[in-house]
Image (tube, rainbow over all chains, first blue to last red; front, side):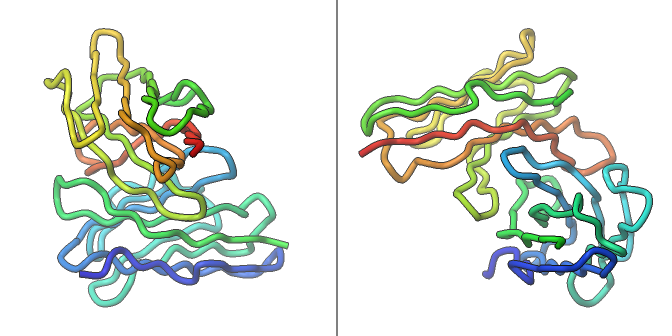
Length: 112
Length: 113
């Protein structure tokens, strides 16, 4: 049973470009969370999704950021018009209801 | 400020010694969890302790929870070089946001061979 798969592992974007981060949850997991981690800091919650539904997006910036978890395919975190402050590691975690979270290895986004 | 705050920020010990990390939080919780993160990797779940539990063991790990003081500790006994990592506590307040976790800033543990 493969773990949570995130791609790409590293992503470099110039200011103003779009970044698309993908997350495939563990088999049988229907809950997906996205977190952001700045260097030397803990993870900050961004958004919680179930299939085709955003349950809680209170941690996500209101502009430029969006997330989806379609019926088929991976969850996508999309950042439009990236700025240097978006540089961070973005982690996805999946869960079967009420069980511990399983994290992917993250996507490290660098905005130049 | 942070819901979970770890103390110390960094800890360096010799192999075979015990390592103790502390975590404080501010609001009522459903459970508290500890995670480990190796450099450049994702987080690995270590142990979960519910709000009605006081102590839990898993292998060389021992976690305590004091809800009156809003604090928890993680003890790693007989440490090994492979235990070198960052350790994070995370609180789950329950409710409708699934397992939305609030993480502390972490303790960087270095175990010297």
